[in-house]
Length: 333
Image 1 (tube, rainbow, N blue to C red):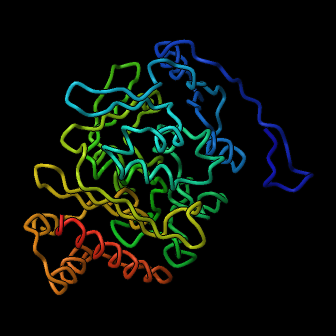
Image 2: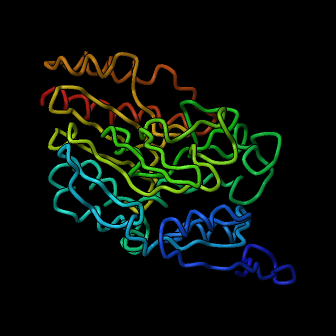
């Protein structure tokens, strides 16, 4: 792999092996080796390798594993999506579009058509943040430094909620929808399997700085379960970007009113993980019949804990606008 981010005199090849796993057990055994990393669509991995973030010795190709493939019906009336399923296939799948439109829309708006055609669901959930300091190896907490240069530097696209000591935002669109849908993320490693609620899969910088999920080095995402309780409910996904839908979200929202009346409001682009709105806002939206003044107050309450940095205060109004629209839709439904 050629390091194109260096001048010609300093460019060099980074050697690594690529092993096509034949079974899930084969993949998990290989991932126990030092420097092994799973690879699916590789739309982000090869970029981060070129930028010097990971240093893989052995890439474990999991794209052809039967255990990570397909979209199937679950016994509870939900769906199971394999970790290696492409985002384009999720967005186009009839059952996903009809029963989980928030996820279909989120996948449909993740990157360009070319990216969606190769990017896997597991890879998208585990992609690294886009902070320029991290990506350019400017010393920061996430690449071995002892400070966050973004806090007083270029922070236009970073967090206004749950920030510190690092202010990255998680870049995944589907992650926001999965948290709102109460999805469960299935993980496998050499110690066994785990079923993790999507809301607990992503972690804050205060919990760990080396990555953005709870995954151990030898674990991988094998699938996602969408619960029957969220199927066919009132759902929406909306995303605001700087240029077009292929951009990463400045702010996004997934909103769900389940068939039992429970409400979920989750923001993207504002925190190091998908940000679930609490502050009793969801409970009040459940009551319905809200007037404009009440809706305005609920949107403000949802953002009471926001602490914008020097260049990203604009995200407050973007988030408030998306919240007002979502609350109005769910309350009316």
